[in-house]
Amino acid sequence: MKRQLWGDIALALALVALVGGGAWWARSSSPAAPNDAATNANCDLNAGACALRLPDGGTLDLSITPRPIAPLQPLELRVNVRSSNVRPLAIDFRGVDMDMGQLRVPLTPTREGDGHFAATTQLPVCSTGRMRWQAHIELEDASGAKFSTEFLFAAGNATPAAAGPPPAPAANKEGPPAHRAEVAPTAIAPTPPPAATLARNADDFTLRSAHGPVSLHDFRGKWVLLYFGYTYCPDVCPTALGVIAQALAKLSPEERTRVQPIFISVDPARDTPERLRDYTAFFDPAMIGLTGSTDDIAALARRYRIYYQAQPADANGRYSVDHSATTLLLDTAGTLQERLPHSTTANELAHALQQRLAASR
Figure 1 (cartoon, rainbow, N blue to C red):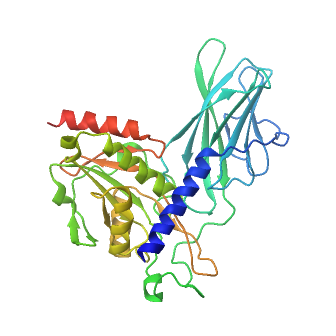
Figure 2: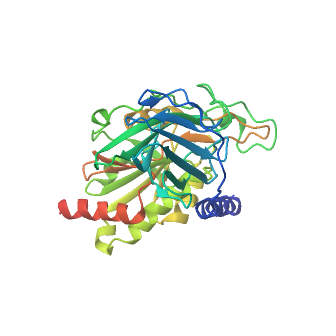
Figure 3: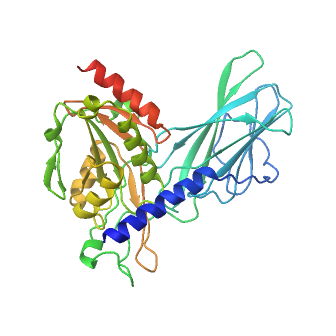
């Protein structure tokens, strides 16, 4: 089991490195006719470029390649402005179906001349399921005033699984059928709630680790970094846990003793306490992996407004789980203080922790 786990982790990190270092540059097809509305809710960036009419009469079009848009692939973003003095500055991506945190991508001019801008990124999705996204393009006019336009689009090829467990595997099972039946994806409200309604309570919870029950109150007096994911996640989880480990390494020994990282599995059917122990130890020996019953995980995810959805299993019984890609920061009383997006760097996370630790001495 350990040899297979280390192989899975090594493959996941290799994929992350390959994705992060690659860049695919491709031409987009001709844009669709521009819309007069401020929001283009009918465009399909999987089919081609989408366009908007700007307030000064010019047009702006956005394209993403390669198509269809899928996870585990570098994406090229192109923004072209025609007959306008407006300058695009950046694109902010947000998940519509699940809260993936905000992913901000700065735009830079290309060698093609005025009006052409580009960037590369990767959407933080853990599966090949289809997911809706919102893209806000921040713009600046000739006077320096800033405004934005918005596109809605879908990414991925498959249709999301309906609420309910994936079918039992036909062969090469990754877990006993009895465990497979426990997989029950949660379908918390499809649109993330406003920040004001996020869980900010100090209610306790108890889940299972390889060393026995672990409760949130066990860490009173410490700041807690809470991340929901699963060990079979190919890209997002290894990246996020790697950032947490790097951030903790930047703290002083005294600061480090005041922070507890916790990884909670949204895949209790496959993530046993022992597998979680081995997985988290790869990133940081102090990181604790927790699991529980399907109902326990669903209830805890609802409390913290974490979204997850299991995808249909393939012919070999393998499946992926879409989930929120945010890191939760809980204070010394167990109260949620901040939701850190997937785009947070190790330096930014370390700085945020140091500020909180200094203020709570």
